[in-house]
Image (cartoon, rainbow, N blue to C red; front, side):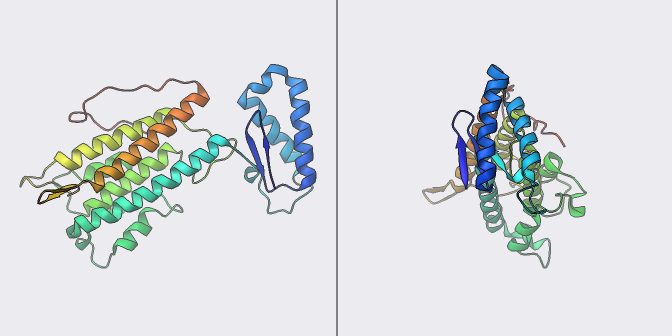
Length: 268
């Protein structure tokens, strides 16, 4: 069963009828008792969780988790955005390997499928000995390191996926008491822009691009990579805007040229 509190847009799921009625009554009591403070997200959320922790154990089995009870609209938006980012990043990784088959050949026995599985395994941190245990931005930078002899696609994707994870606080799903940082989300979007420029312009000592992305076949331009990156940037910017609107905090937009900018911090 799912019910919606119109004024606060709290979606309550997987609760039996009796619990739902109790939650509705609680909302009325909260409005009377707290007056204008009911509009404060923190107060409403904490109070609701206290109620749930009281009534849920008596009407459900021991495997029930309180966090599974409520989601706000923003939690659902975050779920959707993160899922879409993972889909796009997997598509990007596959395309990079197909465009740069020599990178996969550096790791005998590996396949595109095995590399994708390693990168998108949520049950382990993205720390790999072949990348000198470097993470996030440091892992991405390996792709453009002249001395690095390993799989550059794996390096850039392990770093990119790790960065996106950190921008969503390493959470696979979002609930009422989870909060995101709009600056991390914004910085990750800017970093994707910087990464796109480097992939298109950074060359090795032989004047070859470290990794091939967009290309031109005769008079036909292949801009499929650009479209994927564009979608990723838009998703992160939109999520940053949504979170900023919720917290009333201003995003610090650092104005730098991507041609000279360093990657922005995300936080580990």
